[in-house]
Structures are given as C-alpha cells and as structure tokens.
Length: 452
Image (cartoon, rainbow, N blue to C red; front, side, top):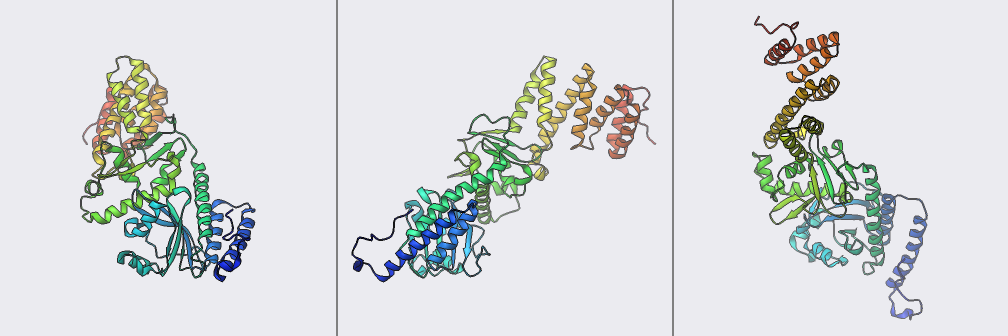
C-alpha cells in the first residue's frame, strides 16, 4: 500500500486545507479498497471497482483503462466507468484511436510519467479537437506499472488533481489485474498442437479454416474466422518472404479498393483487436510485427504452416521408390488436407491460385494412394479415405469411383448399387459419363455410358 501523502510528525501548518483533505480521503479510499480486495473477485470486477472508486475520489465524470499497442500506433478503452450512468455505457471513442494524434500521451507513455492536463486548450489544435469530441475539458492519467503499455484515466476531475497518488496506485492494480484477466481468459485455449515443441513454436493451419496453436493455447477457426484480421493473417502466411505495406495488401486482396489511407487504419484496428484478445498466447511476442516497410509474421517465432508440411510430404512421396514409404507419406498428406485453404476466402482472386494448386495436389495424392491401396487390396482404408474426402468434395466422380470399388470388393453390392445411383443424381453430366465408363472397365456387370 502506498504511504500517506503527508508525514503525521510534520508541522501541519505547511499543508493547505486541500492537501489535508486529499490525504484524509486517500486514507479512507485505501480502507475501502482493502475491503473490496478481501472479497473473492475476478480481475474484471476488481478493475471496475477500482475505476469507480478512482472516479469518485477525483470527482470525475468518466474513468477508464486505455490499452495501447505502441508499435502499430493505436489505443482504445478496454473497460470504463461512467459516473452519470453508473456503468460501462457507450462512449464517444472511435473503435480505436491513433496514438500519433495524441502527441502529449505518446510522450508520456515513452517517458513513463503521469499526465495532468487542466485545460485541453493548452495542447495541439489536433489533440484539442479530439478532446472536444470526447467531452473532455481536463484529464489526468497514470501509465501502467513498469512501462506496460496503457493508462488509467479520469476525465474532467474536479478535486485533488495535484495529488495523483491514488491514480498511480489504481494504475498499478489495473495493470496487474489486466494481466491476470488475460491469463484466465486464455486458459480455455489450452489445447496444444502436436507440432509444439518449444515456447517459440506457432503452428498455423490453413486447410479447412484458419487455426493457430502455441505452447500457451489455441485459437480455433470458429473464433478467429469471425475476426476481420483472419484473411490478412492468411495472406501473410502465404507471403512470408518480406513485409507488406497496407497498400500492397489492399491492392492484392481488394483491387477495386482505392482508399488506402482508410485501409491502413483498418489494418491497425484489426491487429489491435487481435492482440487485445490473444496477446498472451505468444509468450511475450507478437504474431504480426510492424517494420518500416509494413507488416509481416514475426521472424522471432518458429512459425509452422500446414501447407508447408503438405508441400514437403507431397514432394517426398513423389520421389519415394519404396511402396510402403510412399503409402505412409501419401496418407500423411491426405490427412493434412482437411479442405480448401481457408474456405471463407478460397474463391477470392488473391487466394484462388493457391486453392487450386493445393486442391490439384491433393487429388493427385489421394488418387495415387487409392491405386496403391488397391494393389494391396486394403479396401477398408480406401472406403475410409473416400468417405472423408467426399464430405468436402461431394461432386468429385473419382472419389465416388473408389468408394463404390471399396464396397464391391468387400461384397457390399446393395450398398454399392445405392451409392452408384446416388452419385449419378449428384454428378455433372461429364462426371457421370466418366464414372460409368471407369467402373465398366473394372467390372463387366456395369454397363458403359451410352448417349441417349
């Protein structure tokens, strides 16, 4: 606990009435804080209590914690308390603010010092305009503990603005609880990928949807696909050889989009939100880093992408002369390929060539696997692989061919007949014709395709 603002053994005459009142109320506030901390509260509840008490002590109309991502130059309130509404009601903040538009705050963050701006008209005109939008006439703020990037803020304080002891204490508590909050939130992600061997490893799956695994947890596709950063992460995974400017990314992904300044702001926002949500999953590093020429995946992390594994295994399988090794490698490749590369955007022009390339290699791999398993007469394995692949490629005639073959060879003629009939209903005319002809070459009892 912080010491009192004055030494009780000192001569009281050297202190003003305001200082004495501030010290008394600070002591009372300490008692209230201690009572609150005796309760079994989660980090968010503690922070909200601290914001309310801090706002009351300084008689402000709003208090909040600002989370800052300095390398991308943006910040936004994470939690806040509105004295008028007694809760976390909507604010006039943008979804994120540019740090460059608040030079006073940028300097205070760099120097790790408190801020006391009694009149916002004394700052730069641009900064002053932002304060007016936010209904701010005066403001005090203290940075998070030990340089962590953020502030606790009180807007329009009416008393004790020259005594920031409580504000500093509140910033210390908020930064510690914020850290604990993120750790607790990320415990639900504690599922490790098999490729994680060290704290620097990051496994990224693109087949079937974006997924990210680290030594600290996992981000599943159903979570991250809702975030607008997802296609940008996919783009950076595919183009990892250098950093990419917002303009370069925009031109590649959205060729008809020409408001590059707006897109640059959007990317900052997407990265900021991603970091806010998953910052503690990367062991103190950032997945996306900012360089002078743009954004790229962090080279300090050992990033492993499933498409790279597929390429390596596919190449080894093609060059293998040992039949058993070839089957083993082809099975690995086929199991890696769950579906198209990032299906939400697989048919967009920037991703389509990649989609088609891996799709083509997958069908070459599975066709070769089926041929070798046919030679081995392992029709149970053929059936399993065909059924699995048809879940995502329901109009592929060759998959139906091998599925039907696996049924016929195991004596399941009725099932094979029904599957054959179903395939003829689903497939396009050319695929139907090829399926009939391919099956008729293998089995005499199946008639070849004839023009009607």
